[in-house]
Amino acid sequence: MKKLIIIASLVATVGVNFSCSDSFFNIEPQGAASLTSLSNKNGVNALLIGAYSLLDGVGAGNTGRQSTISNYVFGGITSGDAVKGTDIGDQPEQEYIEQYLWLSDNTYFLGKWQHTYDGVARANEAILLAKSTDVKDMTEAERNQVVAEARFLRGHYHFEGKKMWNKIPYIDETIYKRDDPNSTKVPNDKDIWSNIEADFKFAADNLPATQGQKGRATKWAAKTYLAKAYIFQGKWQAAKDLLLDVYTNSGKKLMPNYHDNYRNITNNNAESIFEVEFSVNDGSTGNNGNAGDNLNWPYSANSPGRGCCGFYLPSQNLVNAFKTDADGLPMIGAKADGTADTYNAIDVPNDQGLKSDQTFNLKKDVPVDPRLDWTVGRRGVNFLDWGQMPGFNWIRNQTYSGPYIGKKWMYYLADEGSSTHSTSKRNVNNNYRLLKMSSVILWLAECEVELGNFAEAEKYVNLIRNRAKTGSVQDASVNYVVNPYPAGTFASKGKEYAQNAVRMESRLEFAMEGHRFFDLVRWGIAEPYINKYLTEESLNGTDLAGRTYNKRGYLKGKAYTKGKNEYFPLPNDEILNSQKAGAATLKQNPGY
Image (cartoon, rainbow, N blue to C red; front, side):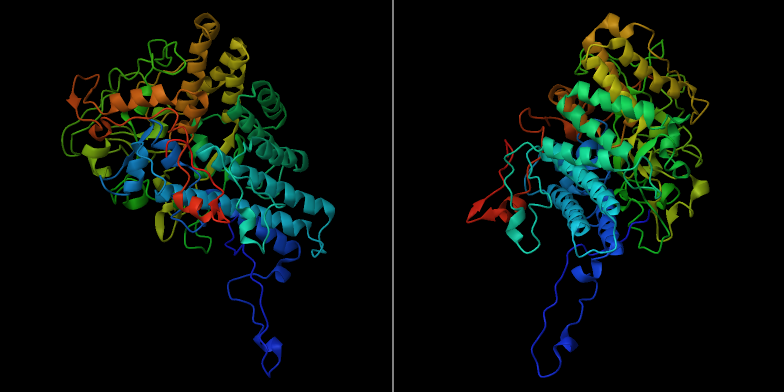
């Protein structure tokens, strides 16, 4: 489903009283749609498509990167999986977020807030019009489906805000009044999980199992998203029941190869439950092609994207996490917060400090999980079909940001042109898989651990590990070793080990997809986990070849503060704008 750019606000025209006919002056505003012109089936669907169109984060009046669906700023560079990248001083707002120097006037928080509630407003507009008696050419079934899709989207946008700020206003079509700007100035004094649940429940009960157009929400997408809401609240049995329904009855299944989830030619595959659709060469300017992530590309003109801009690079800690032990298992310990893990003691060999024309022979005998090289570009390893990643020449400032490149959203050289926009090869049609069967399986594993069913949890984790073991590999010269957990491992090592194993598997499976920080917070382990990362990533490194080098020294002394950094500050501008009768209706989060 291609994105349609529409004006969601409805502008009423006013006649002017002159000697000529009033109708002469009643000219419809250019670029705007009147309520009358939209009051039909096509108009309702146009408003609904407008609500869908914001899923990618682009089109809400900000830069796009502030609200891109990947959440790479808020969920990635804050999590230990990635660093901001590029040069020091480039996009300083991202630097402050990466280093936990969070202020309420940071434009990234404002951009994300505006996008969240723009999405909510568009969903509410679609609902109001679908319910309107002025629309005469829709059946009740058609109206109901539009409302269900719009409520799915409204649930999504509120969910995005909830995990960012915790206490946020819930705005539905009964609160929003077109003619009253103050109608949406609602206090953020309530926990809105029940409202989000109600939106997803309605969608699950009223949406079809399949849709004729790709990208539209289905019953299974709504059930999966509802289960995710339960997971975030620790409602383990309720989440398990829903997830089992999706796992058993949706017809979705794991794709044979891990990388099938990250190629444009396998968009909307059998594993995908809900995708954010990207398109290129569709008559638009290119913003439909994942424009929110268009800074996150190698710096060289000979690389994917053809040069610019060097943001969002994998951390050494993330690369080290893919190491495996002699049994092909992750190098983790029996503490649920990950602080007993050993994978980060010695670094995976890398080319930090070496230019591309200096000799470097990657030590490829180090056993690693094959998902590493589908996730991270590292020197000496094949980079899709571009040949071996050359290291320094693809990095904007290797000394500052490290030797690695993110890989999951990159395109194959053979697909350049067909998968890239004609005006920018950094705008691509490789969809973002928001909900997929691998998510369902690992959430089931998490539920089973919390419910004390360790054998079942182990079974689900091993489904994911076996796919990694038997699927395709990026570079056959690398020593890929990954195995399932031997039967009884979780039970014998106890609950904390089992929790940590599931959490590590989620990290390996979904690395660089923008989920990690929000998971760390909901697990209650963000403070010890992140502070351990900050300490270790800021020190000089030593790799398995015995070489020493600088890492991310700018992180030295930075810290995550418990009771503050679980949630971001509400934008100061929005607090000021929320005033009614001289008093702000929005209350700032603790610590800001």
